[in-house]
Image (cartoon, rainbow, N blue to C red; front, side):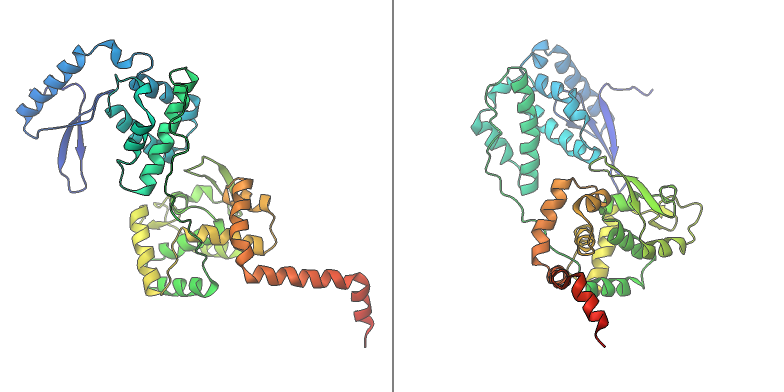
Length: 349
């Protein structure tokens, strides 16, 4: 007879292996034995202990109570789907420290120790951001007076400043010619839409009108109508996609996962002797639009960046670009000549 155990979940890994866990809100995720009898016994013990726990577990001002309030807040609901995914992970880690403990037990030392428990720089920055959000809730409700997650000395990863050169683009396209056409399709979408690789791989044919591609960015939730460059339009119209394929970038009628795409992209780049990455095409597209004379608001309307973020990107990369400097000097020379000079030039035999 099949017995459904409370708070017991089953997970299957990529190799088809099955693992069992006890997962109850406010409690630490616990791995259960594979043996069904041992699994049932352990789950009953964990449920009994949880049932006996007092309401102090979510007492006002506790860690569990603060996290619950944050989950119910408008700020949490406004997070982009990609951000919610890692926020939930760190919220679980914070709660695992002890949901019944008072949130005020997060002294400066406790905050630093928690953040430094993560080995990678990006994990520490994410953990600090989530903890700071919790401190915001605690301060609002008068649980703490000071935000101990402010002013942390967090090591920052060096921002990528790689820009694709024209000859690198040509070499990559040539090297990709021996691969399935979906890689070239993805490359051109990245090059001409200024979107993130994850958003490009999610683009579907119904989003493409022939004149523009309508999309909602996964990270920011921004809704964009990106006009289609003529070169990209010619490529897409010439694909003759199968009715069974929904996504524009598809392999054998199926959508392409990001990890598999990235692996193939790097393989082509190595063959083409190019050190740039797929995500660098987004930055390159912004720069090329600026070189073509597009304004900051116009560029932001394509990429989905804020006006301020677009300005920062261009301020970082444009001053170092000689092509743009040459355009500026050429325009200055034309301005100095003026309309009278141009008219005189036309009269010169």
